[in-house]
Length: 192
Image 1 (cartoon, rainbow, N blue to C red):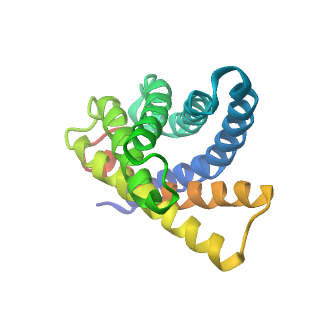
Image 2 (tube, rainbow, N blue to C red; image 1 turned 90 degrees about the vertical axis):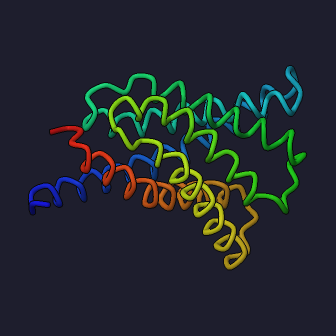
């Protein structure tokens, strides 16, 4: 790999992390506010799924802003991210009845479903895009583990902690998934 290509990959990774750093807290806060407002009309379970769909769209928009530079066309990234986050949340909620002790499994399921639907877009640009599915799962699980650890260490319990943990989730997920994505896009020549 040339020095130029290596620098290009690190720059892509940095932009990916920054996009997730910004999009995750924005999506989490906006999704949370809308879901709590909508709970009166939709019930808490449906409103939470709607909130996750909105959060997924916002996160997907942030990610799309970066990924489209390398692929040239990823317009479906935003809606599939919304669908994946909402669908993964709904599936985890049904399967585990949202047991807080199962957060690792819940985020693993969400990561798998998000990975599958995003792979449907990414696979059009990268032959080995299937690696995105386990990579996304690892990114989600790693992000929740670091966030949970940090929450315990700092004894966070205020609304501000929700924002801080969303920032941490975005950075950790962005760092893990960005390494994989930069490697996949580089290995298969996307963006050349």
